[in-house]
Length: 230
Length: 252
Image (cartoon, rainbow over all chains, first blue to last red; front, side, top):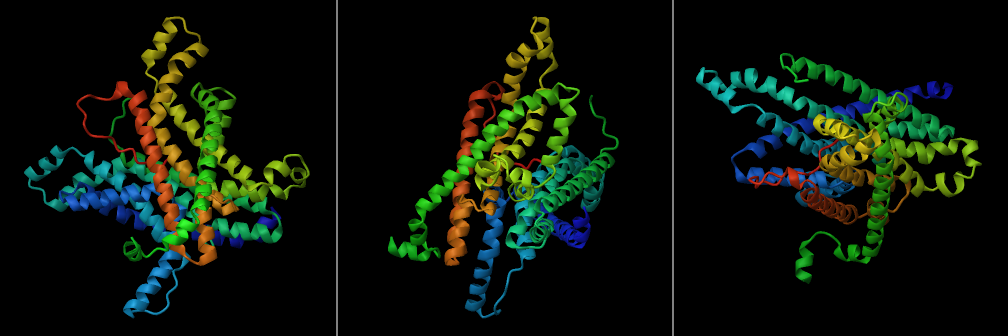
């Protein structure tokens, strides 16, 4: 316990890095998810095909493979393109950028399905009713689509976010100083790997536990007025 | 053929040269994944029954176990077992250390088994709880004891109902098995990383690994489709022409 207190600043820094990475990749994932859902529901055949290929490929390949591919391969490609076009010199892909973008794109595929399902769950009659009452498009979105979409998407969102939060641990493999990396180095230098990995274990459990509670409260908030059959 | 190959910006010859290495990696990955699934599944069945029947002692204990293992990353669980356990002299000096806990393969297997058992327990518990009340009532009315209705009525239909969700768990375990490569094992990704480290060629190693994993996922998806057609036949509506989307969704 004393040892953990001694290294607490490392653990706190790592935890903050994990949270930062998870939130950054969440923003990217939400953007890709909305884009993907829009493409899957669009009348354009090419857009549907592209979105289908995106979700199938991304969900068929393990996260760590893609992270390593982007981190090591992305650097080579960026530099080759830089040499070919002469537009930039030597660039280095940071661990954070590689991790956040890859995890964001991967979970964008899961959010695509979540959002697609949520939009499809809204009865079209309600939107037609809005139109016939003379509501503008933005008013329909704000008052009819959005509140219900949030409600239908929240359980899927909670699920995706919890998995995503845990997936960020993989970025320690490419050397980002997140919670796992810092706990590991602290444990290695003190010879107390169990103590520090257990500390990381507990911190992850707290992060997922708090997220779970908060998102469930939000689910209750957006489900006001919905009667559940018992 | 030569001219065709020159258009592909990958060193195909290198991949072909190391093909047997990759095949060995496939063997390690499949071996670890399916052993963990088998052992985890066997552990999960009694735990799911205890959870579903709300056993006064085991239910809360198992609930804590599944909560903890589903709430933390598999990477941390694996590190905790592989790197962490060696901190204790008691274990280092015991019979468990030499053949089991000092070996990366065993540690990966233990971590994966405990992880998949936690997810499978909750999945099966849900399937058991979803048994239609009428079926259970009919079983009681015809004089089935608790054991016999569990064995003959509840479990067979619960297993069937769990097939679609379990196919996701299988794919996620396969995806999770890449963590073996972080504790020195030469699974598919391990070979890819070895190639990257040795020749500094990222694409050859990682793209080959990605393709191999993708092919395995396809095979698993096909196998489960066949399984579902066979065991969930009574649930297929005749008019439905559309095939269901069974690409995995994450489970927290």
